[in-house]
Image (tube, rainbow, N blue to C red):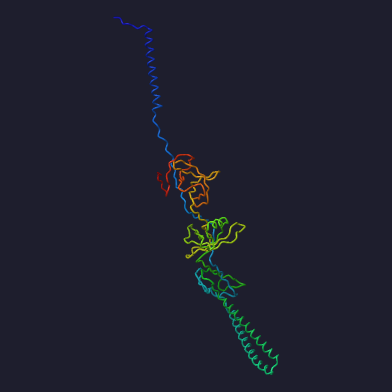
Length: 399
């Protein structure tokens, strides 16, 4: 049996149909792959909002302090000096100890001054005797004159002699008083109670006006004085804010001061400003201020320098924010505020004095606003964020 063979034209048509079918199938497969690639791609998760730490802005009364360099001064500082000349015989105290008022500290050679006192006393006795004789002579002359037994000249001479003798008695009495006073100066005593320094002269030293005059010093430091200088601007602030600077006005707030010890700690007792100079030094633009401070344990030593902190201003309902939250540029200072819709607002503010790590804000913020204090370096105005409250070193998500 013979097989029927297709003609050549028929074979070409069939081949072309197969090729066409395969091309269409390939195109459909490619289109499906493209559709799956671009339209069936899984959706990406939305980007997370940046997290910023915020603190609520709060109004409160704020005390503003000024810091100055002060010097401690003893309430009383007395130099013990020899008022008479002589050789030092005795020293009756231990250096650096507490002494009482009127206590004898030094004894100067008294021989010469005791002799002068005895001589003055003898001259006084002689003057008294002469005065009594002149008084008796006058008593005898007066009745004789009345009986015309004595002349007027005799009476005048008797009266003059009596008056002269009384005057000499007064002079002798004054000389004795001066001699005894000078004798008392040979015992050098302390006019105040306090702590005495080391002696400046040894036994046998010639002391007095022509010798070594200064013998020691006595310091009363149970209460000390702190001297410092304040600027006129700070004074005006304290005056405007009704802070008392040495005026003893009970209607004003007392301006108390604190001082820092050498180890950096704060002295536990506070002092009160009791004096402010009535004039400003034109060379420095400052004026002198003095505070009185208790020193029961004698921790503060006269002559040492210290840092003085004094109340100069009181701000009512003031806003105080961390200094780290403030950015500075040529246009001024600004902060970032998170609005209720979590949108960042760039807010320019007017700053006031610095208070340690904080700064007062004069204008630009209101009570209750959320201030960005952490994560503000990459923020810009109008950005949406996720605020978290920063308080007492803990962060809690805001509702």
